[in-house]
Amino acid sequence: MEFSKNHLTRIKLADNVLFFTGAGISAESGISTFRGTDGIWNKLKPEELANFNAFLRNPDMVWEWYQLRRSIVEESKPNAGHYAIVDCESLFENVTVVTQNVDDLHNRAGSKKVLELHGNIVKNYCIKCKTRYDNLVVEDNKKVPKCSICGGLIRPDIVWFGEMLPQDVFDDAEKAAKKCDVCFVVGTSAVVFPAANIPIIAKQYGALVVEVNLTNTDISSLVDETLLGPAGEVLPKLIEAVRNFN
Ligand code: OAD
Image (cartoon, rainbow, N blue to C red):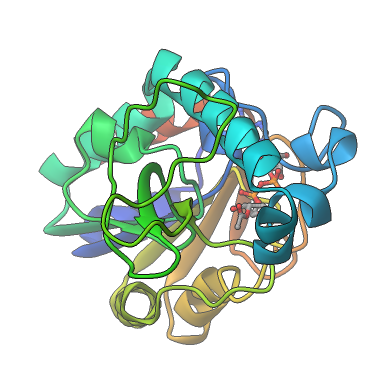
């Protein structure tokens, strides 16, 4: 795979590097993406599963679906793409991962600074009193658990459609986007806002923006370069090329 010398020079000189990731980086770990031919939202309706009213209407069904997704995530492992990002920490002063993924795989791979814009599937909280129930183990996956303090329903700590992103996390992501010298946009269709503003902000503030995806996306026309291929193959090669570039 050939990389632009100009871009390698800029990457080599970078101090602050940001990775903006989406479902595609976890595809090679066996976790389905949301859009595209095999995407989750082609088979299931987000309005029946991934929003607060659906949860109130049918909490057991929504809980059961998230328990199934949790079991898929638990059985999966980070892949070469996640580990290439961890490797970058030895090349650059400051590496920030801003992810739309809820699968915890960047943390499990060992990335030190991960900003989760859409929450994390291993976490939960009570909808009434907000008590946290992270890594909750339940006996019956088909029945939504109730808070032991107030009896409220316990929900996954995930940003559902129509909900706000955690403001402090988004603020930190925005700061990282404004500060970064290079922004890699990996495995995302970049169509879900406000998350998809992050690489746009990076570009507006002068960063080199490099996309890694199987196909061109909505953001391809804005980025400096799109590297086509699976993240688990392209990222390790790219990092190796940066390491060896003089
Ligand atoms: P999408 O499913 O919209 O997009 C996945 C992207 O990954 C597509 O552009 C694919 O071409 C690309 N892709 C697939 N396999 C890849 C691979 N091996 N290497 C590189 N790229 C690959 O997923 P997101 O953009 O993450 O929101 O979706 C954004 C948000 O929409 C998600 O966070 C989720 C969803 O509704 C919430 O859960 C709140």
